[in-house]
Image 1: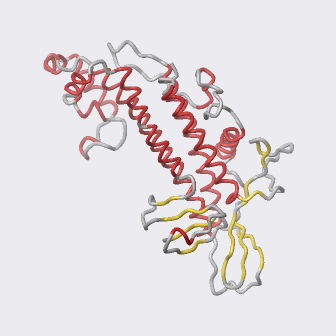
Image 2: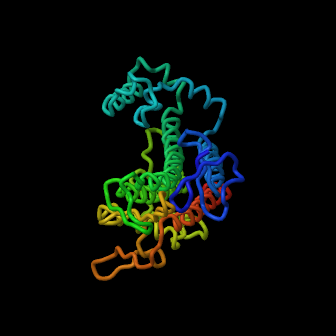
Image 3: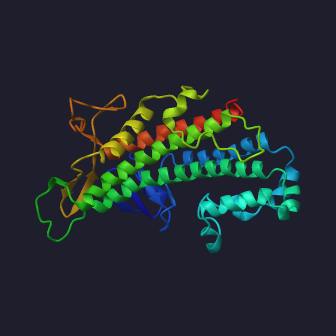
Length: 343
């Protein structure tokens, strides 16, 4: 089994007991890139399990009779039920456009030839609405999975950025490499914080929906959260609840600030590099540097905010950021479930 260590090198082990537990590591259980574990990875599994319970929380609000609901659901045209929510239909159905779906919906609701189907689908708009909410929760689950994989990618890509060749006959010591390969690690770090911020956005959407009650299904309701982001959290009753992701503490500030730096200024580091330490004929350490931060803010002087004087290694700081943020995500879900949708 292959193990990626915190110091940017890999080892092969036969048993778990061969891994030094004094530093962070990622153990790949097979060649499958999704088959991995690391200290604290069980948090992600718990998050996904508990997030699945939110489906039931939503359903209990809007499904009045589960038996009738199941009967109606089996008669809903797949085109109306799933089109526009992703590439989840057959090849023929995937080609349907927004205009075609809209036309089909209007025809289905008004044309006399569909009168029988309308009679056995009195809750059509409620069903379509609820499927849109389900799709939102499913998207959040996907984002959390991608967020975790982007965390792992940082360590995988770091190992691939610098490799020794027969031409690397320079003396033992510490070196800096700035190249196309080295820049990939900067992209991986940036992607991690973009995904983390997307988690914030989607939880804000979900909590807005849980806080709102839809009563009129004479037409298909528009979700109140569809254009909302984490910046709209101030209208939430969960806002600033301690230990949730809505407590704007140092970890959340850091995620938001790094994401904003990347999105609004193009990159986290204008001159990305990987540093490595060579000893003998092998690399014994690889690392990237994280910009200087204070209380979740990039250290700034006039126009400049990319300082590296504190010599913070990404390898060292990222596991702690990831663990703390995952704990906040889990506490947020627990709070939602305990408070019945923050009502």
